[in-house]
Length: 173
Image (cartoon, rainbow, N blue to C red; front, side, top):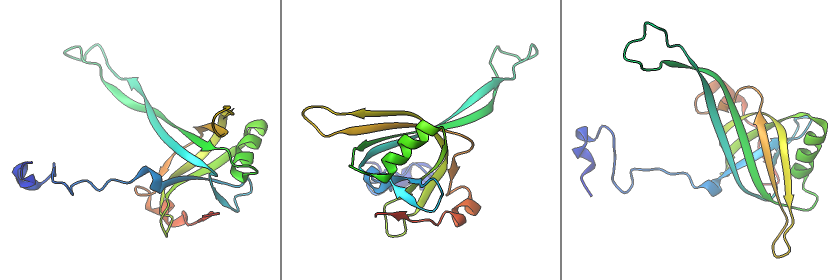
């Protein structure tokens, strides 16, 4: 292993064994606020979740652009969240997802670390766009929920004002 200071005097590209401070996926949870916003529910039986952000682009190329390179700029942005769970009987979070899908209501989700402070990572308003329950003969019942963002996904390490307000701790943890 090369010495990490060999790369531009160690200004970046730290390749030493301790150079990466990775977060274990099991330490990150997704929560959903109750319909009235009074409780943050950790998703019961969560196995995994994924937050996907994307941006559309708009071409701003003109006839005067030289070299035939397309020029783009960021346009509308969006996010989606998917969550897979083991179905937990009478789970309030599961019922909330199913009710929101049936009623077409907007929910608020929050991603946080499962540490003593429940450090907030990000969050946003979502619409439940898909709910799938799987009941195999040889395994436990599971549920997969697809959430489509409505509005902005807020990263709490970028938006300090939002982070200061993101103080609700999850119930049942």
